[in-house]
Amino acid sequence: MKSVQNRTARGIQDRLGAEFTVLEFETPTRSANEAALAIGCTVDHIAKSLVFCTDDGKPVLVIVSGASRVDERKVSAQLGKSIHRADAQFVRDKTGFSIGGVLPLGHRTSPAVMIDAALQNVSPIWVAAGTPNALFALEFAELVSLTRASVLEVTL
Image 1: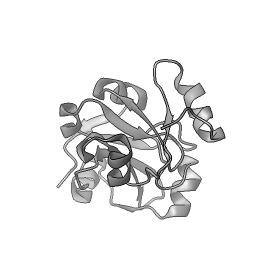
Image 2: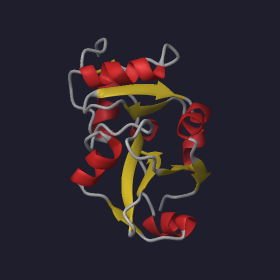
Image 3: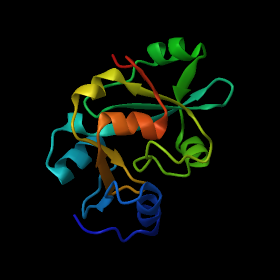
């Protein structure tokens, strides 16, 4: 773990302000398992920011514990639209970040955002900070406030 060096991660730190601390790791944190190993926590403390696409091309961000899987049927039912997992180019175009570094806020195109209710039981929650080796920690209420998300049961 080191102070923020990467330009993207520094920009995220500037956007977040002093209330949060972006950390960069020597090892990759692209997946929930990699992030948990780097931090030294369990995978349920890692929040995955997963991008989906509606059939009409709108982005949907679903935030779940690293130990969970999204139930696409539940998300579709909440939206009233079908969704499918977005490809890497769609993710970069809509969020401004590559898969493995997608943070839950500050996207180029504002997505519909859902947070799985099970994350209420996790503290702290670690999320990606714009690069494949940067993370920051926050509490559930902060995550909901920053993302203006709907809190729903969206996992299998």
